[in-house]
Length: 160
Image 1 (cartoon, helix red, strand yellow):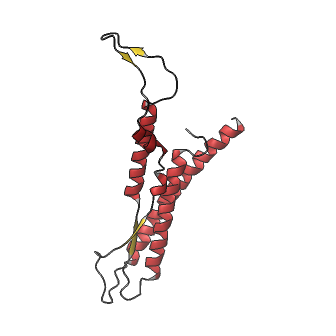
Image 2: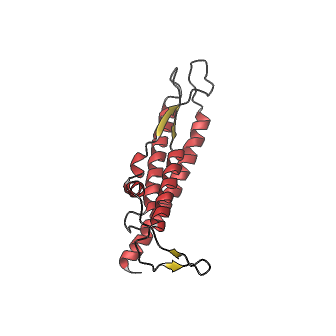
């Protein structure tokens, strides 16, 4: 594992980026609460983030299966078979080198399914304020997780 750019920091950064985009969309919705024919916007990114985490887990599994650390061949005492570590296939090597984090693109979606008022506007101020609060709390949780990761890294650098 790379000490400076570990997976937790990278994934929390992506999550925080998605939440910031969501905050901007909510702010736009609130600003246009009285605009005729305005359709509220939502930002979807959680499924992309889950897919990235899944791909990173698969990379970790492949790395574990193809460990470069020397381990003597193991002999199965029951069958006499010799188990050795395999080398990764070309496809696995390409997969390990591909950057899954660069594929993250939060999607801005227009909400066409919420009911609209007589002027064609479908923004509900109460809903937007609740979404704003939830998004802010999620951002706070991720920023605390990232702060904790950097705190651990700082301790390692200082030798504590």
